[in-house]
Amino acid sequence: MNVKMRELLQSALLTKLTLLFIVSYLFWGVSGIFGGFSEGFFRLLHKSPAVISMLVLLANLSARLAAGLKARGKDAASGSGSGPGLSGFVHAGLILFILGAFVSGLTRFEGTVVAAEGQTLDGDEAGFLPGTLYKRPLASNPLSQFAMLEVDPRYKPNRTAAWFVKAKAKLAGSGDIVLINSVFPVFAKGATLFSIKDFGFAPMYRLSHPDGRVFDEAFLLFKLFPPGNEDYFRLVTTPETFYLRYFPEAPLAQDRIASGKRGPLYKLRVTKNLAVIFNGYLSYDEPADLRAFKISFSEPRRWAKLHIVRDYGLFLMAPGAFLAFFSALAAVWRKY
Image (cartoon, rainbow, N blue to C red; front, side, top):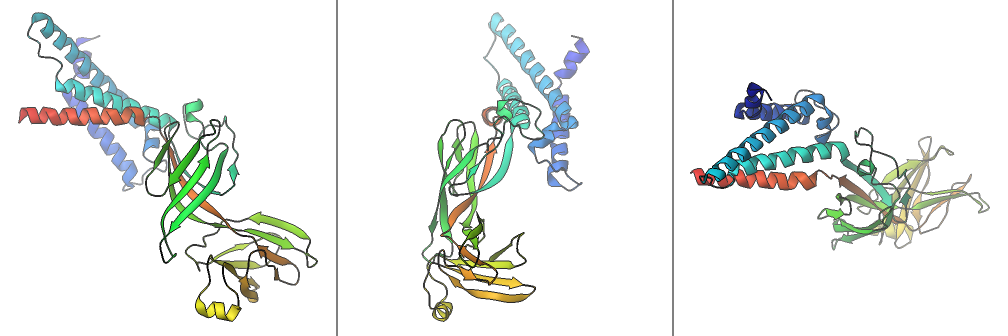
């Protein structure tokens, strides 16, 4: 290698300038001050300026580490060596971190999925994430054949809020059961991190003819929590708009007296061309007669909104950051 090129690669100034460029570039994109990027932090690694600068930094750190080890080897051979310097551990940690960042940029998945109890999300097991460069199983979509088995909210005494939410899900392939909660993220097999961000109720509506023959039914995911919160939906086959509330125990006292019913109840309001054609309480599977058809709602299932992160780069980034930080801290401590 040319002597000047080797000296350039081993230059501390090159390290500082490259680090400054990378930090400035990432700040430019992540902060959004100057327009920003739409892909998110780790997708910035796909941008050629960041990739090129990180490759330069990787070559620079590797050259400096190799030069340091070579110098230490000569000192040890002459009997004047004092063991590996702390700067070498800092360089090694940064190299691990950069390699982990590349792995993360190539294989990272981050997204949310909403699934109700008993629902299975079937996907293509061989499908790869859009935008990834590495087309291998490590970059496959972790949500292929993902099944939600149970969602269990733990309510506060007034039942208008939940302390936390637990969920049980089954993963594809391995069939592993994952216990997820809304308090702490949970690691599953394959460097996948699960956490619960929200939950709600998913009743099944059933449309039937006046004579009772069912012609349409499906589960719908609603934001019906806390009790009394109203959500609405429309169907392609009918012009009506349906407004729904759910009371797991009982509605408000004045409404309970007016309706003559006790919970658990749905409160349904149906409008057509701005006119209210139905407004009342329904028990589970009790039909509301809308003349042209009847509609009823079953006992609801619960749904959970899961935040899922799968990142193999963490296996290199975490120890690299740990090694670099504490080595630098020890070096500063030794110096002062």
